[in-house]
Figure 1 (cartoon, one colour):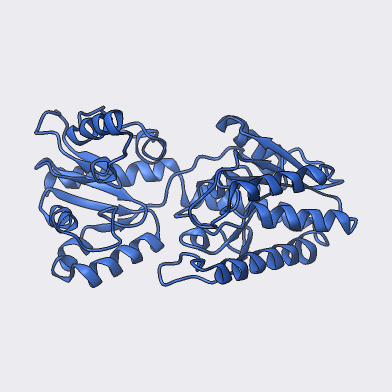
Figure 2 (cartoon, rainbow, N blue to C red):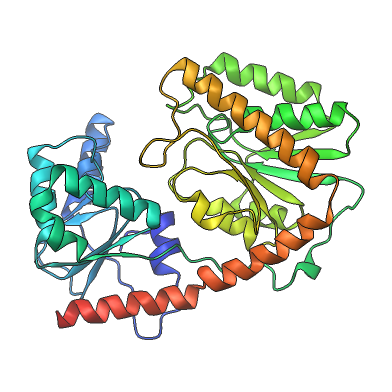
Amino acid sequence: MHKHYPIIRNIIDLPYDTVKICKIVDIFKLYAHIVYKLFKHVDYRALHSFYDANINRVDVIHLFNGVSFSSRPWVSTFETTLPRNHNHRTFINDYLMSRIASTSCKQIIAFSKSTYAIQERYLKLHYPQYYNKISAKMTIIHPPQKLLIESYSEKVLDNSIVHFLLVGNDIFSKGGLESVRVITQLHNEGYRVKLSIVSIFQLDNITKKSLEDIENLKKEISQNSKSIELLGYIPYKEVLKLMKDVDLVLLPTIADTYGYSVLEAQASGTPVISTDIRALPEINDDVCGWIINIPKDVNGNSICKSEDERVILSNTIQKELYRIIKDDILPRRETIKEKGIKSLQRIERCHNPKTVAQRLEEIYVNALQA
């Protein structure tokens, strides 16, 4: 088992009764490491493939976004599709898909209904010959999330101001620009609002922003320091503490496969304002938070390939975020508490780590019996 954050969160750090997690040797990871050291190139196909030549003495192999070449029973949790590189059909993908259809693959676990549907469409379009075999192995297990507070009464908030938090290194794709402008506008209109931003201001490949855009946004933030504070990078544990100390979390994102920060906010009793891409409508709604509807493609991704589409997207997010805060939240502050309580309830109901551990234990046992 390789200890990367998604693997730790979704597989390793669970309260199992009968499962022991072991570190394993993966020939492909050794190869990928050598390639990176020599050529400073990341071979993603190797990172998402697994082969151990039967070196590892384990009963079941559990991969994350990976495909095993081993004959040992294996399962894989995935975020979008298996195989990971799904943009087009290649002879490599042909082989990887044959491995998923093989008898050694016992289960593939989708993160969400959205992920499940994307995998189904991919199979029907490119690999209909494998559809029956692979679809029979598919299931859905949402990521686990432990409660960070037991009761909403544990939150200590300043009732004289509404405090928002935005967390995201890719500041533009997470809706940072729109959030800054909405909070600035509301502050200038006389509302008592504050936005804290945790970000290292990375550029992304989606919004097509530049270093100049980053500098302009930082300047905009500094000019509005009475309502917006830039915290930069802070450790993960401090982010979780901060989530408990704010009224709402903002995630008006245009690029997310799931949205761990939504779970973490809800587990803190903090409702979220998010967009409705990919899995977000499955974990956030108008009962426990607020949703911004944006233009999406058939897979639930935002439509933002052209400059015109990106402008429409940005304007939609900014307009709807402003409306939600001004018309729904500021006049009825009690809804923050109501939805915060609902958030805690849905985390306990839908993401209980013990329930996830039990589901995985059942999958492992069935993998050995099949």
